[in-house]
Length: 128
Image (cartoon, rainbow, N blue to C red; front, side):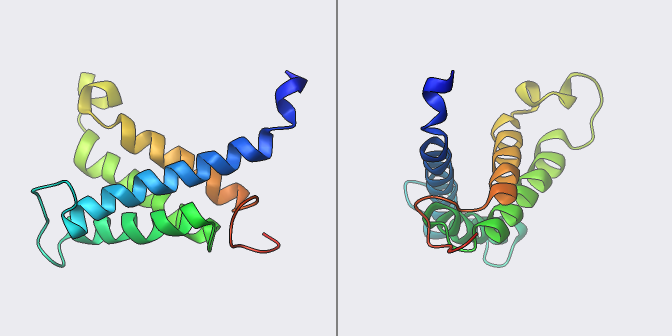
């Protein structure tokens, strides 16, 4: 697999950019109503979540304050999973495939990785 080693930084940068873009799109749906009929009430928990998704997602995508933005995003997704998906139910409802929390768990850990690694390649952070 040494053949792929030389593309490691490029692949990570693409992961960061795509994850940030997709997260920002979720936020734009909530906050700006783009391709969505649902907009949470101003100042609600879902509205604040949308603001975090939009702003932090854009920051991760362009690699600006990447570690902070990704850490905040990871935490938001942890809260989303525990509060809105799992709801501390036992039995089958514990599993993300059952409680529809797979995307929240995946985002949580992808953003945790990005928070640990930083912006690195193709980002605005310098010397990160």
